[in-house]
Image 1 (cartoon, rainbow, N blue to C red):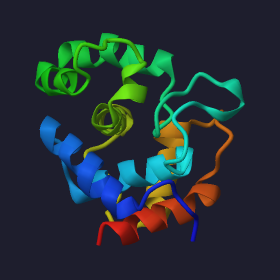
Image 2 (image 1 turned 90 degrees about the horizontal axis):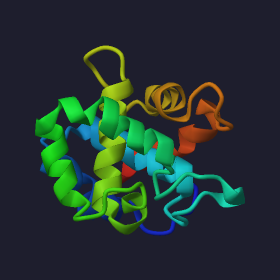
Image 3 (image 1 turned 45 degrees about the vertical axis):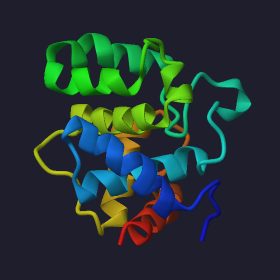
Image 4 (image 1 turned 120 degrees about the vertical axis):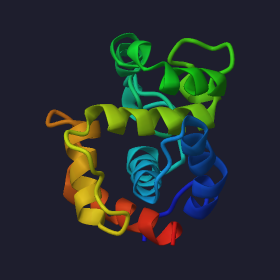
Length: 162
């Protein structure tokens, strides 16, 4: 079992679940997906990308992705944008991903909603499908990670939310 900077059950209960509820997008499946994404991306140990890359926060979102999501997606979805804005206080730059963990968790959830093709997320108890969605919708084909590498993190997320 991988080691994390904090217990996954605490991160889920104290950060991810409240963040997704604040936007009205909570589901058990999305909670597991966001928890597993942070586990894979940073192990909840670091908030700045290792090796000098641009990604920020436990969910390792790049500033370009952050800004593009606000400009080309959230600008047209005020029911998501308003509560998300409240989670980042007055900070409008991607640095909010570093300063406001609830904002960063909610933003990860929004990213999946934006990128997912089709109406359903993988079931909350299917680590393989969650890892595959992380690879295709979050990490991308050009990303260094693989669904196989991510699998234990999504399995740990599932176990932490049971």
